[in-house]
Length: 172
Length: 172
DNA sequence: TATTGTTATACTCTATAACTATA
DNA sequence: TATAGTTATAGAGTATAACAATA
Image (cartoon, rainbow over all chains, first blue to last red; front, side, top):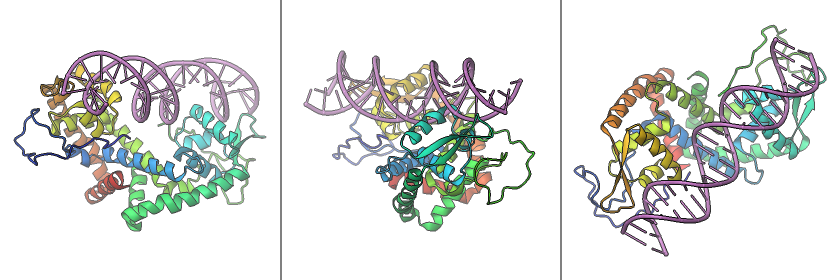
């Protein structure tokens, strides 16, 4: 992140007129974002970083990242699917999914079960602990994380925002 | 991205009833996203990836990444600022900004000028080529990239979306 | 002493090739 | 032959410590 850690020497003769050219004076004023603040990609990225940051803070007690949370949610909703199916649905490449699962399995949150039909496949399921942790995670997300967004935007705007983002994700 | 590259064997006895438990049949059906599709962080991240992907395609002829474009925009709007100021405004750490600038400078898009007041500072400015490239980049972004968003959401929704994302980026 | 730009470094994410065991 | 899971590896992006030049 490291945003806006600039020291801002407050002593400044409020003369930021248009006529200034380049160097010469002290100017520790905030920069003009200009067209940047209207760039979709820019605000999207900044917003995404803020949201992930807040998510991690809300989930600190459970030690779950957004990616891990999404895996648990998807496995709960789709028990009996294999690694390839879960990973590709989340846009995670199969090689990168291995370490993720190793982590979740070592914490006894989910389990790999060798399929009896196709012995190449690992069926994924949540453990009892995984279900319990996910239930607690959902509550934290709802009460701390999503609630904050409601305070900021209001319920109706929040739903409109998610709808537009989903449309971009699916159709852009 | 690697999303939805799954082969989808279309031969399937459309029997995806609620009563199915775990393994046993072929099921190559799409997974249920469930609550995931309502998770702000999830749709935000997916949308951001799609937008950056599209940005890169639109800018292929100029070979500009979103981050490089944002640097050029900010330097144009704020000539005479040093590396620390430009980098921190963009949320880029100073050490990581060095290689980025080396790249832009080697392509003659911007220049570092040792400040006469404070000989520690490098003042940043766009070269003539940098200004020309940025002008072309802005046109590409407007006509190809942002226009696509307008088609998808409509002008009013697009503005509402950017406003909400900016609010999240600044106040969340 | 503090700050600017820089180097070195490390850790996470993401991406591709290739191996193994199964089919 | 092809597919599922895995390993190894490489490249971005991001993070911190420390150094030289300058203030």
